[in-house]
Length: 306
Image (cartoon, rainbow, N blue to C red; front, side, top):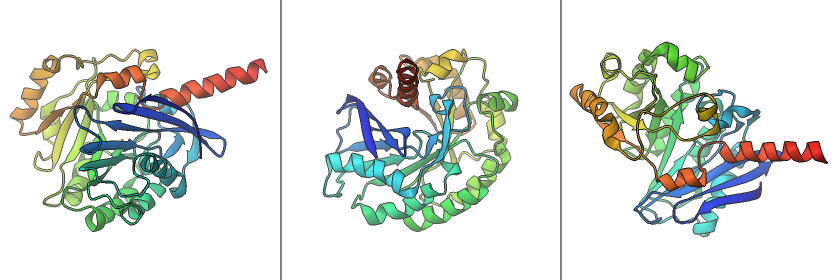
């Protein structure tokens, strides 16, 4: 792996653009403010070379060149850890590794191999792996194996699973995520098998968008609030979001902009998180696929003029 460029600030977020087998990828690290790195450190790694899903709000779907291997995913993690903790002893209270940078993780079985390897590779008592998925229709075997790995290696709150939902309007959800997906009922049934007492609740993630309804009543007909938690996030300012005319309904400067929606979720028994990252990360441009897209455009322009 050849790291080509890096952007950002050590104490907020950094994005790294690298090449593997001639294909660009990006990976990132962040320190959740106001915490110090020793309190909470988040690594975000790529699983695919781009992404075939092409979600309307994500820049990672502008190209797709296949899956990364177990070793290629671990190279990203090794690079970030060796910069901060070369002994591979990671004394961080909450050390999250998110398989959410570029690419749908459920399309790559190597992600599961990495999960098997992490406890052997690093001494990291605070390790919490995190997988965020759209729940592709054919991902049943991936999720079944993930359940076994979680129970064996990451019990009692040491693993985080998230399904990206974004809207309770099925037709509009298919527009946002143009790929066959698990139904709400299928996600809910899997959640009943996945969750064990002491686990973190499974997250249902919504980017709160204008013109994309979120109906807590509909969600409650499928999902048990004792197993699932709702996360509400603003739309990140990606190029794809702008080009597709998407607009956030959650003002990142004013959480009360969706207070009515939060109250309604609470009335149906759902714990609800409003998740707004450090706004300086938007200035850094540390959203999925932005730098690789810019790098590929730069390379294409260079080839045309050379």
